[in-house]
Amino acid sequence: MDIREIKRIVLEQREETDATFRNEKIVEREGKEVKKYLDYPNILSILGVRRCGKSIFSILLFSDKNFGYINFDDERLLDFKTKDFNSLLQAFYELYGSNLEYIILDEVQNVPAWELFATRLRRTKKIIITGSNSELLSGELATHLTGRYIDFTLFPFSFKEFLRYRDIAFPEDVLTTKERANLFNELNDYLTFGGFPERFKFGNAIIEKIYSDIITKDVIFRHNIKMRDELRKIAKYLINNFSCEFTYSSLKKISQVKHIYTISNWVSYLEEAFLMFKLERFSFKLKQQVLAPKKIYCVDNGLISMAGFGFSENKGRLMENLVFIELLRRDSYGHVREISYWKDHQQREVDFVVREGFNIKELIQVCYNIDDFNTRNRELKSLVKASKELKCSNLLVVTWDYEAVEEFKGKEIKFIPLWKWLLNVS
Image (cartoon, rainbow, N blue to C red):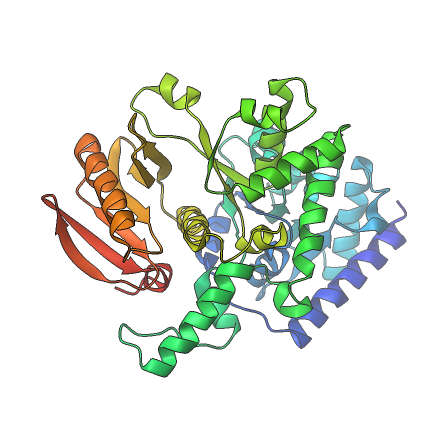
């Protein structure tokens, strides 16, 4: 590409981002402490689902610096080749000065051999790269930068960030009747339509466009999928069956795909695009864990609603999906934990087993209708059974609106409302 064209695109993109910061509401995101990793000769890689706010987050990290920025998710850069990277660097120097130290490469996975350019830059620059595909690190970048990068996964708005955008103060432990009504209205909205930032600007209809772009650009085009309708069918099936168990054999039955290996790859591609996440069943034996059915969760509840799942059908499942994504978010923001689910041969189940290494730290059950006797009995019995088997006494039930500490069959169980758990209100 001609360097003048590259400079024009860089300038126009910068004008667009400046206008965004001038004219739109920018919410402070959680996780900004990752900036500290740029004090070392590392590359900071910010990954996450398309349109979750990676670009804005990256720019905020360099807001007090003179930095170069380019977004490769731009049709004007379709002809950008590996050989053009040096022209890009020259364009940055001409626009921002030869002493430029900070560079953001946005959606850089769209250009072949980008990792070689990033490797060269990191010797003298502080680099942020962003991408909508987890293979950015586990594949291309890791090959060339072993131990020389830090990865951080950004998600759509948390409930804290959601309230911050709505200019709603975080509630205290005790709520007035009016505060309570307002809070639960907001929580219902978040539970149903999720936290993609663009929905607050363009309305809930934008969620369908985001989903279409993820499937088309980040899965079908990236992996050159031929049976596109079949992939879309499996993706929609999984979204509608979020928080449920599945096997690759069961997915084969609802599609025209002949090979389970193909379906397994497709599910991996959906995970790489951060659209969905598999959850393994907990077992002390690796073989049993591998062979057991998996559970599937979606990155944002808005995508679930977009797919046609009725809110009134099962509020508990929406709560469970929300809790799972929040657990992933907290792990990305500094915790080192593994999450799985537990189920025994009698079909007793605990939603989340949280562990650090070999230590089981917490067992979490999510239950909307805890007032129903049969539901309560089933959920608590499963929790106690898992507690004994896994030797963990930190037992939590996330509810819609019930709070207590109770003893059940010799075990102390804490009940906490969803909003308190999401906001870390003790």
